[in-house]
Length: 173
Image (cartoon, rainbow, N blue to C red):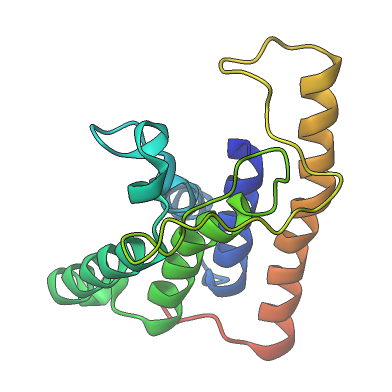
């Protein structure tokens, strides 16, 4: 999957919970944070990311890390990060990465149950395709892949805003 799909899904989670009275600068900071959260399993760290997908894409490991980060944020800065909707949306953005990577049938699958199982999960969506190589040359194939991801995941951002308006779940922040 490209960073575009992960980023849009992170922004969709944020759209659902971002306070409506935030300044444009605060919105930019929150958007950057949620894009980063949605990309954590691919961060290029030693033994993490694309160096070892079984570890970095383990649902169990990421849930434990996510819970630890949420607990630290809630304790250290409750006035900024202590709101349950923000923490839940951040966790969703982070953990969505693992599910999204299973949607690409041209990949070998994602070992989301590691360390309990090495079985790879694939839930292919026919029109989604990973980039053929990194860094990608900007050609027709890359443009097609990015446009299909944009058309698939951008509506989630609109859905997030619509749900927030409909049910009013935005935190006070």
